[in-house]
Length: 147
Image (cartoon, rainbow, N blue to C red; front, side, top):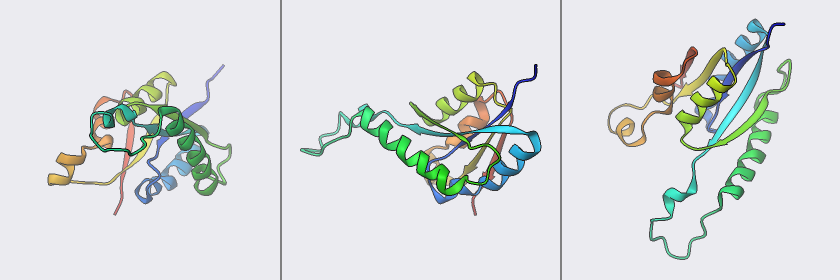
C-alpha cells in the first residue's frame, strides 16, 4: 500500500505567503499530494515579563482558537479549487521548529514556503523562519521569494 504524499505549506497570513500558492497548487497536482496548511502560534509567555500596565494579553487558548478561525478563513479564501481541501493545522511554539517537526512527523514530501527576503539589519532583528527551516528540514524545501 502506498501512502499519500504530503506538501506542507506554512503561512503567516501575509501577502508574502501568498506568492507560494501557485507552486503549492502545481506541485500538489503533479505529485498527487495532500496539502497541510500550517500556522504557528508563538507562545504568549514571552510577553509576561514586560511591564505593559493594564493591557490584557490573550491566553494561549484564545490565541489558538483565533488562529484556527483565521486559518479556516484563509484556506476558504485562498486555497479553494484544490483537488482535495488542504488540512488546516495550528501548532504552538517557535515557527521554524514546529514547521520542521510537523514535516518530519508526517513524512512530508516537500515544504513550500515564501520568504520575505530580508537582509541586513531587518534580517538580524527579525531572523528568518525560512532560513531556519531550510537548515533543519529533512525533506526538500522550496523557498519562494516575494518581490
